[in-house]
Amino acid sequence: MLRLDRHPLGPRVYVLGTRVHEWHLGAALLLALLAGAVTDRLDLSLATGIATFAGFWLVAKDWRDLSPSRRDTTEWRLGLHGRTAPLRTARRADALPRLAALGALLAGVVNLGSAVTPNIGWRSHLLLQVAPLQALRVSHAMAVPASLLLLATAPYLWRRRLAALRLALVLLAALALLDLLKGLDVEAAAGSVGVAAILWLGRDSFCVRHDPVTLRSTLRLIPLVAIGGLMLCGLAVWIAAPEDASFTSIVHETVAALLWRHGPLDFHDELGGVDEAVGAFGLLALAGCFGLLLRPLAAPRALPDVNVRRAVRRLVNRHGTDTLAYFKLRRDQHYLFSADGRAFVGYRVEAGVLLVSGDPVGAAESLPALFRALGAFAEARGLKLAAVGAGEKLLPLWRQLGLRSLYLGDEGVVDTAVFSLEGRGIRKVRQSVSRLEKAGYEAKLVEVGRLGEPALAELEAISGRWRQGADERGFAMSLDAVRSDDHADSLVLLARDGDGRARGYLHFAPSYGRPAVSLSLMRRDRDTPNGLTEFMVVRAVEQLRERGVAEVSLNFAVFARLIHEPRGRFERLFGRALLLADRFFQIERLYRFNAKFFPRWEPRYLVYEHRLGFPRAGLAALWAEGQLPKPGSRRR
Image 1 (cartoon, rainbow, N blue to C red):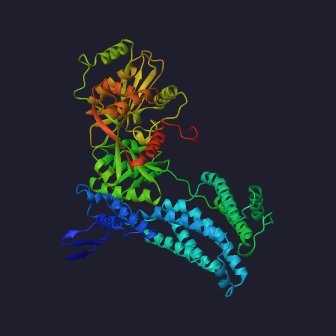
Image 2 (image 1 turned 180 degrees about the vertical axis):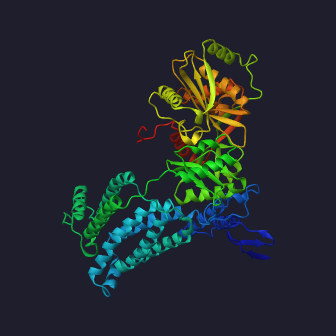
Image 3 (image 1 turned 90 degrees about the horizontal axis):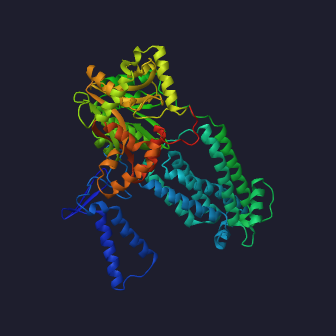
């Protein structure tokens, strides 16, 4: 009739062969309360309110089990139920860090109020029979900085910092003891013990390790620590001050206490140690500021060394079939490898987001373990995960990691075997090519490693004139340099005018295990005739076809489908908004340019964490790609 089964994620209860879910218990509790209210057998009380809240909470946290299509029989959590991503570490107490942070905040406020207010009379008299008055004063004084420090740990508990968990447990234990010593404050002590129990239950979910502070972040943090400490000291003095104390006298008393001098206010009896407590906390805050400034700084995040880059190159050569795989050879990317070394991702950290460049590269059987390691790597550092330029093929793995996908745009891929200048649809491109030929322009495709110093200097000069002092942009879909020895096997189509002067070029990255190349850079002099870029693309396709290259990936067209083939009202409205942004980001213009060559469209995606994670991931992608200036960044 009643059966209880053990399960790694929680007990399973069956009644008459049917599993009992938490929402069953919640609904039964609410029905019982409703029946009691209807029959006038239920009084409005604190217990009734707690029972009502518990009923609604059991239903709300188990809402997925209300629908068989959403039901997940393997998942159980203390907080709201949700499906665990298969490639993420499952923790039953994932909801507890935020609850613990709120509990620590409440415990800090309660203990601070208790420390700076007089004790209940009969409790003080009872304590004075076993301890001197000075001991009560010391306990009150020590409780003030401990409460303030507990308040300071709450934001870090919310962020799952392991160091904050350890500090909060020590502070809560100390406060529970001080609550009893300073005034037999059993209620506050019980609250501190309860919050400590919540922290202990959820200890496995505090997985973010301490990250060393850099000099720049330290210089920004010190004023915040100083101002925050001053405000907390003022709060303690304000709570302890008489009701008729003015704001000015409270400020003067706070400053005097921090300087260890007598102020305009007098605190007596058990509050006699408030001045000393505030002064002690001021010294503690000052020591913390000096500790942040003088502590050994973390080693700089050095870019990968030669050996790592060689390992990346070998994997790209062996498994780089994706048209974006070669772009992971940029020198501004970091790498994370699978445990067996047969797969890797390239990434950068922007705006607290670990932003991955395209899809991972490596052996298919090593990718699930790599995704799992990537999730753990980001989680341990308190970083959110995102990837820009992800392809459709690996979207299932990204989703198993718990990430959502957003259509980002289309990659135009030209089939060299069927490409032709014949036909009415490509008439304008054919006219541009004819016009440039008559003007004496010609173009030649060559490997970068075969270019001499004069030709490389010409490429740099063209690029410099095109950018006009602006930085190179790109992260996931372009290379950072043409001259680099790492890119000697890439290809350049150099266009010269009738006088033999270099006037424009296209840079292509190869794909391995697949006869394809991907356009990386497209540069020309600004005073060249219209149609030079179309001329270079046509000549590149023709000469690549002669080399046996079957596919040419052109520019990435952001949100192209939303502009020209919207699905539904929302996409139509969004497409119109994108047209307004075209003047800044060349959204529609890139699509129209690619469409001239009748390519095959391959969608790419931005993947990100959580429903509200898109703005942060989008900002990180814009910064990494150079589409949005980064505050405080210097021109390279």
